[in-house]
Image (cartoon, rainbow, N blue to C red; front, side):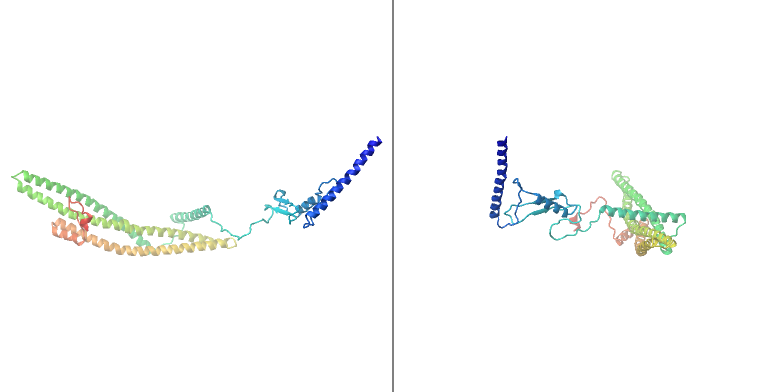
Length: 370
């Protein structure tokens, strides 16, 4: 028993001495190999393992000094070899919890805020709905006799006369078209009748002259009827242009003027109601906005009223000039036709530069026109 214990004691005492000698030799070798790095000293435990308590303490201090939003997964501590000139590198990514972020170096570009098309459309719909509501309320108030409306007596009278004249001109146009249709049928019948008389004059020798006279008369009447038909159709085309284009264009401007007048009265009524109410910090901005909208619609109303006045003036001058020429044409053509004055009828068409189509003759080609 005593020998065994003594042997064990001897082994235990010699082993640490040997390890200590090895560690001392390693430290001296490392000092010789890296003379540049005086700080690269690694403490070693008695068991020969590297003492990393220093490193853990450094990491713990570093984590405490980092911002609270930086997680452990976002921080990496890298130790380089002893030959490196750097002691250590701390790599940290951008953290989301803090107020500061790691950004790349370079010029900073501030992007302009883009407008949202959906919001713009929504704003347009809102303005349109509000304007429609105000105008509808104004129209209903006027029909019920509760609301007031702006009236330009002179302009309103001219507009009423124009609308009444348009109805009368449309009636004249309708009757002239009916006359043209009936005259065309009569001319067509006279032409057929003339052809029938001419055929009988060739087949009936005993009535050759009688059928011949009637054939010539019907053909002459058909020719004069075609001349009169050309004058009537020219009259119809001119009156149709006057009624359905010139007058209609003026009436479209009148409709725009009336819409502007309704908007003007609607915002005028709205401003009057706000002015009758209390004036405080909440109502003053509304009154200013209403005053601005009222002024804008007033300018629009004044502009449309001036446009209608100018168009009515030019329309009256154009109407007198056009109808004067067309009425003279219609009268002279009708009078010459029923008087049987063929020369006067043809002279009337030449005076107004009316060209007639010869029956059975096609239109000239473009080479012939040249």
